[in-house]
Length: 247
Image (cartoon, rainbow, N blue to C red; front, side, top):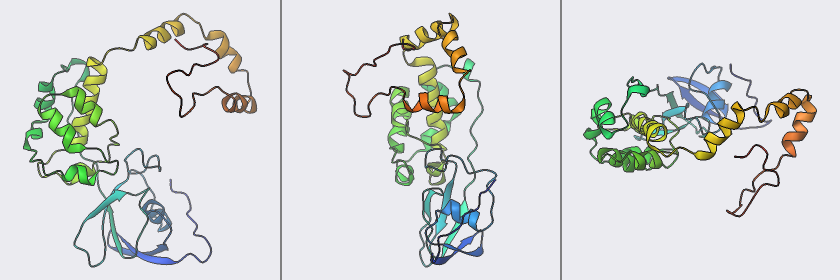
């Protein structure tokens, strides 16, 4: 459900076009807020509003400019005479992850269009997160799932790469498969995670959880704000004062 977007007093109004219809909106708004200001409600294509989820991929033109521009609606500020349209998602191929072999051949079979890549690099140029899309595509073509998973780690699944692909690939779906295969079936299992799961099953934290459930909201906020946190610029020498709950 959209929330009201109210412009500041004396904010300059500019014209934009949404699906061909003109609206006057405050010049300080993002595309997403401008659409809501114009009366539209998001039923899809709106997620975190912080440039992370990739749900709001948008294409637009500018008056007198042949170029098709792209961006995230929650991050891109409107400009006069913008012509706006949000792109649909690109379908992914279905597969049963449990039965899928963690091999490059699994990726090749599901996404043979991978080899239609002509290395034009349009995918990398359009990425709002500066992911080296062509690099992970190249890694996949040579069968390196680990490299592809690492190179595509910052992908937000917006689909803008697919919108520019001459080879008709949905690169971000292929990269997601690579990360799933590598992370779920190839990467070494974290020993501390297994230890933590064993502690949970053994009831190590049952008493502490029961106590937390008796706290009111204010007490919970106090615990949260006063919790011990690793410093943002810590080095490998930092250790928590309490090791409770840490494997």
